[in-house]
View 1: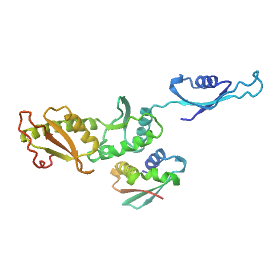
View 2: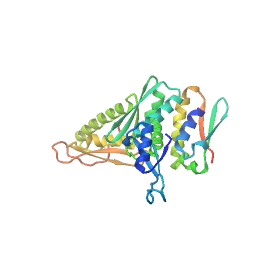
View 3: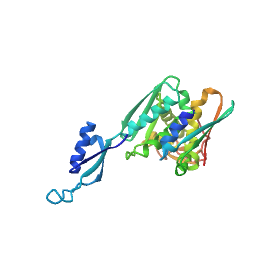
View 4: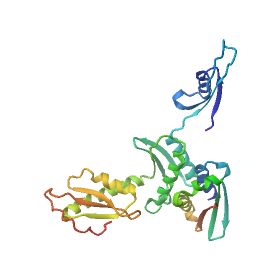
Length: 223
Length: 76
């Protein structure tokens, strides 16, 4: 979006002229003051005009949606793209038919696209919230599946009375497991190993009436 | 494919006007070479090639049906 430059006797006047032309309220724009005005002596000597530039503020969500729309269109996909803001993230939802290849194996293509979107919009926005890109609810379903897995494996750890190791996961997926079990009274979680083979270990807490953890070697990977 | 690479590259660099993408290859392999301003080369490659790898992943997904392998390179 290009800047609109305006001059006036004071900064306020210059800004007001710009807002008038853009037909926008002040909180909907970015303003840069290029030169403060100077009244001069008796309004005659040393008078300098104020000089500002103004442009509509594009929210991060709008920038992210615009970019994803361009990408899906250029890929020749028939897709609708919508943005949604939540407290700790900006969701970009892609809907349409036949979008499997946009997800890729285990979400790999979707992760790549999400990485690029974040790079593209982070450069121009102070908003530090991450952009999460989803296709037809894939991430939500994946999160639900991981939460189910977390609960099942917690039960297993308690029943066996020893630590249970999950398969290798990406950081965002491990986080889902940790969060799902953070308030669980009978197990605790931590991660072990090096990326990309880092995995979550679920350990029963001792002395809660269930089998007492005997901290043997980890169970073989499950999943 | 060329337009997709151009779109991705232009949005990632400081000098979008200096982005050039050239196509070459044969029936089996399409090579897309990205040329950017010297100070944008690092941006388009990324640490440990992470950015260009993400571009490759997205471009290959787009090319999926054509039955031709696609490679994306950065001229440096």
